[in-house]
Image (cartoon, rainbow, N blue to C red; front, side, top):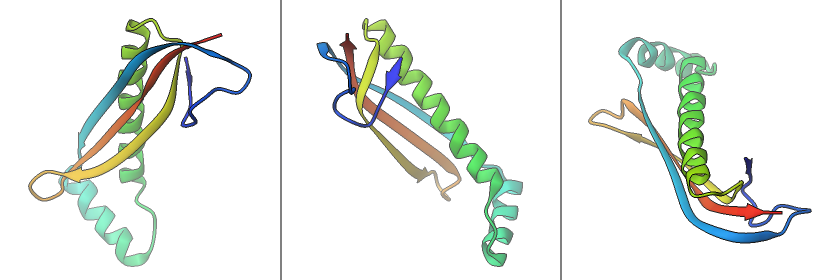
Length: 106
């Protein structure tokens, strides 16, 4: 499955549009990760725990979107848009939503 943020795939021609496909993932960030992330923010370091959670959420959302595209008979997804949000009562959940257009290319 070829995936791209661009509207076309260089060297290929879109022969069929299969519709918009999406993938979503919401991951909880636990108390210990929040605590250590806050400490890192104070001392200026990167939060590896949050980075791992974001990466995992993005991979889950991409997999969902690719699965939906395959079910529609597509072999590529173009125009992909990735959005990140913090949700939940105290912002304790990380959400990644991805959308794109499933297409058949040749």
